[in-house]
Length: 421
Image 1 (cartoon, rainbow, N blue to C red):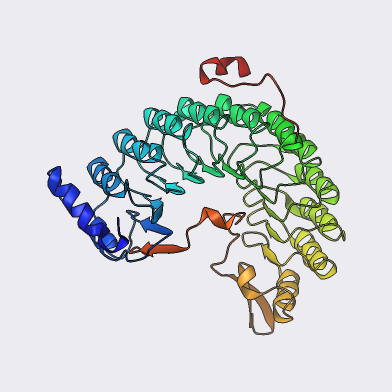
Image 2 (cartoon, one colour):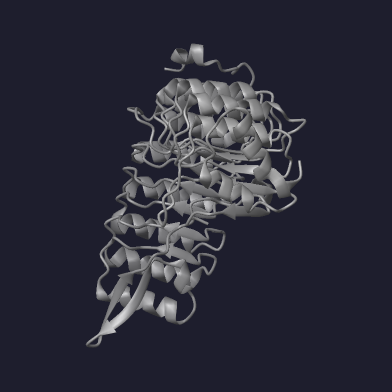
């Protein structure tokens, strides 16, 4: 199928199956005139104009016209009304590896549930082209997540999996830790905000996984309810890990004691480059522990967020001083803490001397009546670590506003997940 007339194929499929044409889809397809590596961006959250959100019927028509189109390598279907039925059509598309070349599929915040996750799992067990799958915001539940975890035992191509806000529970969280001991392909996992993780047994399993995993580069563990005890367990595995670059621990319950374990680990781990500790409660002493680790020549940390951590003058000044000692750290985000005038002066100096670029922090300095203040600016820690350029297409069409050691004997089946507890 030539890319110049993909809209004609879509219109023809709609006519054949007596489907009303979605004008938003048609407009995007009409602008598709590229020959390779196209991502169709059909997200339903355009803030500037009303768009007709995709439903299952729209997905059926699109899957039909894309079945023999290898130019389209990415589908952005975020914030639409796709249900389990629509996922079945996409699963059929994923099974057509000889005709389709789909590498990324983003279904964030649709209406997909457990059955849809199971259908995707079955298709991905046979698929070797898809590299990135986004399901965040879909209520697939614990059972749906267990299906996806078991899929990772046989799928050797998927590199990125996003399952934030998917109502995971303890069983599925632990299941991912178990399968990642042997999976050698996944490089990014996001399981932010499970609904039921009452204990921190999961941290023990993730620590054991990190000690032997040789592929994971990015790990999001936000809103897990993790305390200092969980942090201590996690850092035990991180000390032995030499691959992880991005660790997201935002919105947990980590205090100065937990950060003390993290700081000790940073002195021994030469690979971590980005850490997100936003919305914890590390306070001055925790910031001082981090500063001591950052000041070490062996520390390779480049980006750090400690926003809203109840840090006062002493802790923030220690971080500013650590940045003068170790110039590797060049992104820091501090808004939401106690920004007294000495702190304002220190960060103004970092920014004015060029040590801290203005677009790599979330504060900007200004002066009134000989007093220096800091104001918040719209910069924040990047949400992903670009580990593999093949995860993103070379061209994107957008009509919206948003541009090891392998342990044996641990074969996982969701039906047996109760034994994990």
